[in-house]
Length: 479
Ligand code: NAD
Image 1: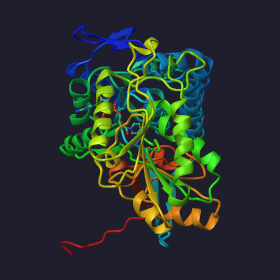
Image 2: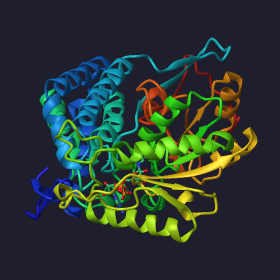
Image 3: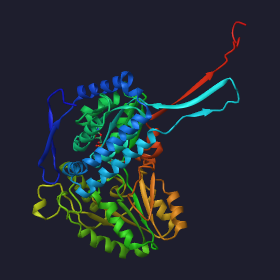
Image 4: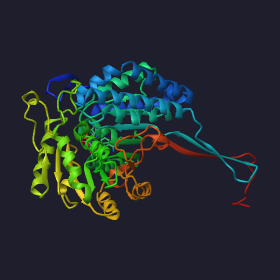
């Protein structure tokens, strides 16, 4: 949607600060117009008469278009976020799978008949779309996070306003174009670009919005929840994480080191489920951390478009400054810096927002570095000597998004997995998610679930229809 003010914003490549594209900068009026369009499309448009099968076919077409344009979209994601092209391509494939998955679910029957024992009564529970949905998404996985909301919301028959992060709007913009190309009626999917306070806030306080689905930081989530309370709307929150990665001495240590690196440093650690808290059994600590540090020092930073690059830059100068301040804090708090802790020396990376992958050893749960989400390439290492203590450390966080346990003892793996208070737990793995399996946070990592059946249920509301097929006067009053 074009900006009514004519304002624009330069979208900057974090690799070298070049301008990738200039986009419209939406404001409050644009946001309110988008909500009005979504409201009209829901209340009066043809969309509400579409059958689940028609919606399903639409979603399959979107998925096909995503694959058709895979390389172009992956490249956009790389230019916009700095992630590697390989990661950008994986994101497009994952998003395609999400659209196919919800296309298949859209057509499935979700209501039920209630048996009352009374032959005169027909009681049914049916599911209907919630209505107008606001979707606000972050900059780290722009396309992926938007699709986890848009695909189920369309499958359920809602209309929507999507506001991607002002830092990385390009892939969402392309996705909305593909949905239009696939034949969605006008007004069903509306895009607002711009800053949170100006273009995002009106999408949350509007009485015409029925649901707000937000992915982003804890503080923003808190504030949105307060605002949404004013009009008592449904709210779904996917917030931050401080995710434990627990390694027992009997684990396959070679694989565990490899995954620990990926968990902490993929996409420069700008991953909500990043394994930023490594918790290692005492007896293998030195060997494990030694290998980890050696491999951390060898990680190749660079342009995401370069096939040799293993990790790109941070998203912005502001975010780089935040990461640097956490490194200073770690040293002040008494953690031992054993890798990184600085910007790269390579002059070719001078104009980018790069930071070397960083490891702090000798960390403890009372450190802010260990408790707060740095959202950068910083890994903290803690030690444990028995299973209870490992679980205690793993749960010692206000967040509860994800965690992992590494061990060859299957009974212990199961015990620890069940005791960790996190929405996803991996056993001898890290970071894998499936469109079919629910994703979301315990504790302050959020409310509600995305993906899986629950991810569709977020966008449906339940109605009970009770029919009395043979009404007789009750004579309760005025007998
Ligand atoms: P953020 O909270 O700063 O911004 C997220 C979005 O909210 C952006 O689109 C922003 O413009 C918008 N926004 C900001 N203020 C607003 C307001 N007052 N009203 C309406 N909208 C507003 O988060 P970020 O820095 O973009 O993303 C990083 C955060 O996202 C991290 O905390 C990360 O853990 C979290 N995240 C969580 C998940 C998950 O699945 N749980 C996934 C990805 C990212």
